[in-house]
Image 1 (tube, rainbow, N blue to C red):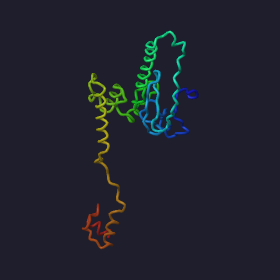
Image 2 (image 1 turned 90 degrees about the horizontal axis):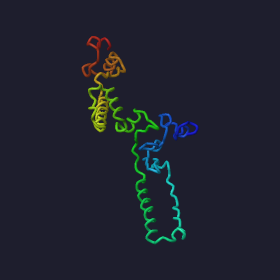
Image 3 (image 1 turned 135 degrees about the vertical axis):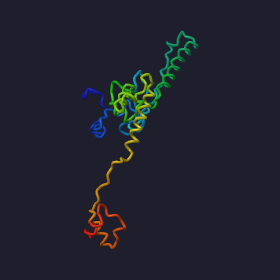
Image 4 (image 1 turned 45 degrees about the vertical axis):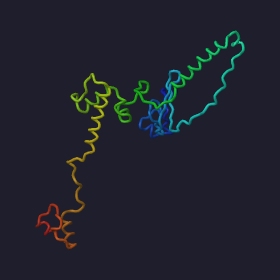
Length: 221
């Protein structure tokens, strides 16, 4: 970050293909690792989100748990056993609760303002869910006009489904064969085809000799 002025984790020398397609970070705010496509987990640590690749890019390191500190006699002096037990019990329950809330889970990408990703990249990689309502409406209006827009009061799920239906329709239309497609030109001329049939002893009525009348075919032979 010091050299580039930004936190960039993709190294162009190690992963030139990722750098070429514009990837800047391997796992930040990603559901899949850009390097190995492994799942990305995230968890909260002191109010900050941590990320880790579960696909093998980041091997887990197991730490040896430290022994709990032994309370000195001076601390326990003058306190009843019940008071000491009450004090000791409270932090323990908080620790258990904290550990449960900070267990790594599959990361669900969000719209980041710190490291923004282009609309096209978010749409292609994660679908309409990663777009805002404003972005979805802009795409629909650009593609088919404002008449196809959902109501402004519609929720995001409605907008997501409207854009998904539009993209599916475009995909179907793009896969249909075009009626105006022309066949490639023949590899030999009609005259040469007529000669070849005569040489092989076939009658000209066996197959049609394209674009040749009877007189033209006789002349070619």
